[in-house]
Length: 119
Image (cartoon, rainbow, N blue to C red; front, side, top):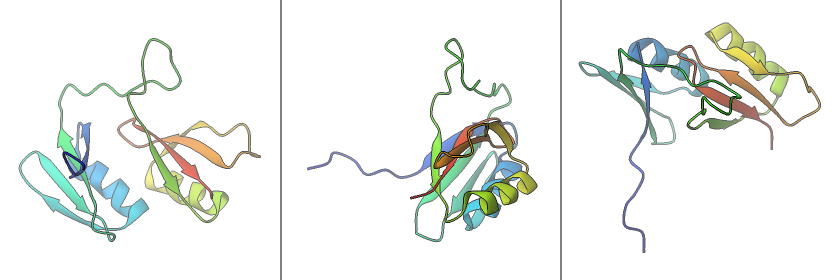
């Protein structure tokens, strides 16, 4: 029996509204704003949240001395189509050299790494 249930994944960032907008463009959903916090209510019922952190330092990827802390794996139907869309939303590529893999690595506008993955 589980002790707890995952409520939300929360990302620290300098601008919660902007980062929620990026992920709303990527995942869909409805942003719900509070003072220094935004919940992105996703279509499947989960919540991705964004908390203001004025001292936010983006993780470095890859780096032995600057751990990425965590990353999101996002499943897409077509890597090329999804890549074009995330770049237009403001993502930046971190590792797209090997185009034969089933994943590509990007950073969101606040620097958090995420992967676009195919099944």
